[in-house]
Length: 428
View 1: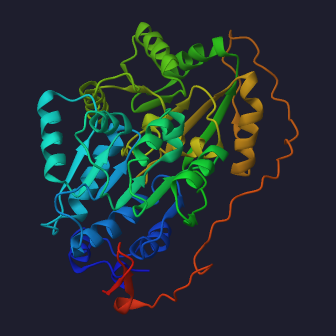
View 2 (view 1 turned 30 degrees about the vertical axis):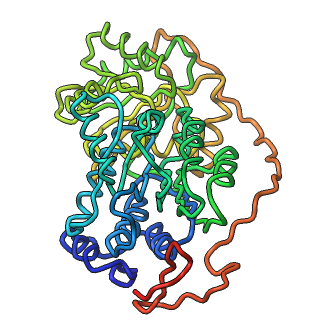
View 3 (view 1 turned 60 degrees about the vertical axis):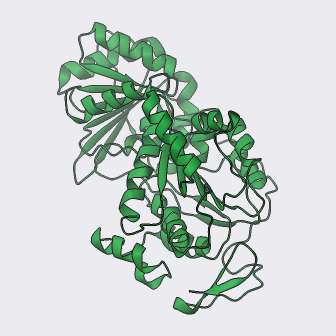
């Protein structure tokens, strides 16, 4: 389906034409009409499916059509990390190129006083779109810099990552400041129980759109070392001695372990750097600049880099520990083999992680090659097959999908009637 077949307005379509965007991705095709028609949306889709455009385009189109207060924050977009907030802001600039009457500001921590003052001025003037990380936005709210009582759109992006990073309580404090009439949109790459519970609290009778998680690219050569934790750094040292160590990301789920790995690699005289949430914004920008420019060979990172960060020439991804689920595994190793390049993904599987990695193999539909440990490291744990645990049957809440429980029959094309916030409709 093409963008011009929707009823996005002409200014948005002109920007998409300039950017050579014609065909919608599946998540865009299913979300854009629903958002334009005023429904809350729960989207489940992994990074790289085009979900940013799936919510930005219809919201910008509606704002550009008018009818929203000029002196209010009309849309809040929540991002778990500063890097993703910056990327959403960049997408906003592209999609909104012809939208003279729609303003935006990105709000995130770790900046100098000058930027804080700029954020404050923009919020007081009434920026239409506010792209923010939870901590910074909550700090503005606490000191009275922000009024969300007239907000018309609220987007929670990467909700599962928000959960992992401990932001859910902050988000619920923000949600309490939103009016009941606010249209709410939530995206998550995975749908664990806690995320579904959050959706029940946050969304009003949402349309659920789920795009199946894609399998890793066939160009990625996947392998695993079954080893004990003390053997992992020795394996890394062995790998780096065997070949080119440039353009490598090493992932770990805990920031304290990232710091330990980085210190150990530096002691091996490996040109490395670290990326985690304890760094200031300036430090994170500098780390990403050095790595993208090739000044750093190895980046040791938490999952902050696993989603949404565009680096096309990564040669090797090493999972220092097994990710929590298959979706996280796909996101991590998906940093390599991009832009028609080949890539390597290596995972260290400790004894405690064997069952979890077997679940990932079950998702992949194949066994990942197990590589023998280097000489002099001794034996690793036995990779024994274990029976899959019986899953609990949980009663899920009722969600309506397209065509279910609707009182109105939506027309097609430009004669559709778009619901306004006061309950009336207007032709578009």
